[in-house]
Image 1 (cartoon, rainbow, N blue to C red):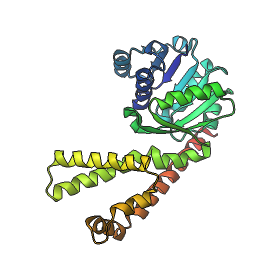
Image 2: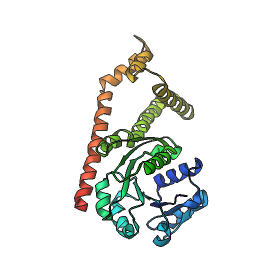
Image 3: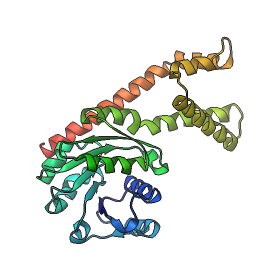
Image 4: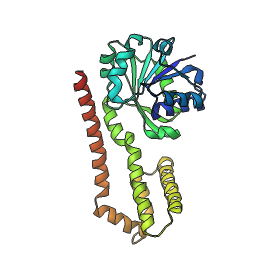
Length: 276
């Protein structure tokens, strides 16, 4: 039976723990969790998921197969420095740290390790993440199969090259915020056109779910689906005309490009600070 150690106990760690347990991939007895100093959070995880919690590194790493790096990126150097004496070549390291490269983790650990770098998004909390996975050449096929299974408990998991992770971050890592931004605008518009807030929210949510389902199930491209809804002289055409006048589509493109560029910048800055 595998033993998994989480270094960090934030929302992403909790989503992964919840996903694995709910999908019967591993039980709480074999998941160990620690963090920097938040005892209350550890106690909550233990009560809710029946995981093991500890600040004793000897106990945490005893017979451990998989180590999740799930602390805040700014704390990774301090955290890895604390645990690097316990990291062994036969362990699998999985990082969910934005902007921290595989090479940076290897340099901090001062050890040749099997490392997976993952970029999930916050929809992991409801089992609907779009997670991208990148690996180094020490990750075995068996380890990768298990990693795939772990991330599939919280949604879709796809392997990409590490140099594509910044683009994934800009597109799907930050993507939920773009959808919430749209929903926020729709909610404000609903209020201005006289719809009650609770009713409007139900319509908005179902509209977004339905459109996503159409994108998933229909063989048509998004452009064609949009055209299918747009009758000449109709309401949709009138609304889309306003979006075109405000160059909304180009703004979304620029938004994703800017988020991607920021992800690259954060990674470069982190490497410089670590002198990697």
